[in-house]
Image 1 (spheres, helix red, strand yellow):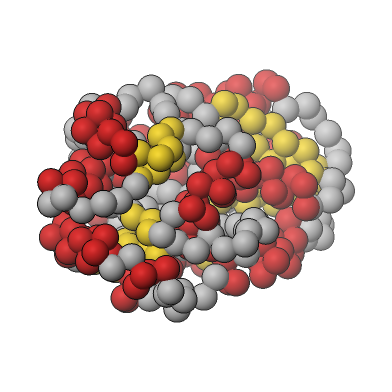
Image 2: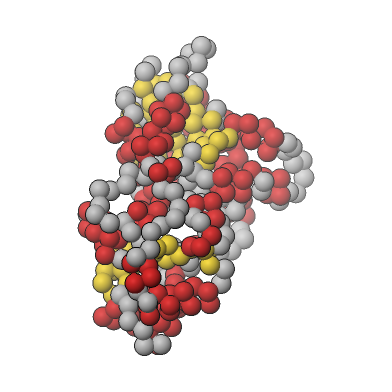
Length: 340
């Protein structure tokens, strides 16, 4: 008996999850597409995988992220449609921010709804992700001019569950939706106030990079310790361990792996009092306005000892692979259906 894992966007947290599952769950077979042009992956990956995943009598479970159009795949490959189908949501397109309201935007959310209808189990990485998706279905479907489907939330909800993204925390001694403008604006204000600080801006660079990045890098000058992608996970965690504060200015976040990794490495988190963050972090680590963020950073710059002596008051263990291993094993090692 084997688990077939399909990842249409093999990068970032998507890659991190399926690599972990393949390593930890017995008899996993993994098929992927590179993490580029997610719009096209969402549109066309089902056809690609229908032609490139070999037929096998050994598959019993199909695990895929919601980038994949599961409905198209199972129609093109009826043999895969017979499997227990587990759909994992890293993010959902019903409430994801878009730059422009175009007709094609509807299709991504619609595809995710269809995928939920054909899935046997629908898993979300946070309660915020699940509830924002389910409670938006009704309003979203009203975009259809007539002959609208009904009762979709009540059909899909019983299949749904929350299973936090599992993080394999390190052994340490201590895009438009992320709103980089607000982040750098706060740092430049600190610089103008004559306050001393250093900053590391870590992460992958994709095709479209907001201009604020190059402007801020130049303006911040010698305050920058690290900039860009660190290919070595050890170097990445070492950079986190050197930091005192980790900041999110995200306009949208369904979980936040990087924030939790930084906190595990000893960073004091500052996050918006919105999105998934109140579910993950205690209230003292949340801010409501850019001005609140600036004032807290200003205070930390003047009194760095405050955060260097601070002990994080939240719970980290519930997000660890050690805590979540059993639930994922159960999800992916269920007995095969009797009708196979």
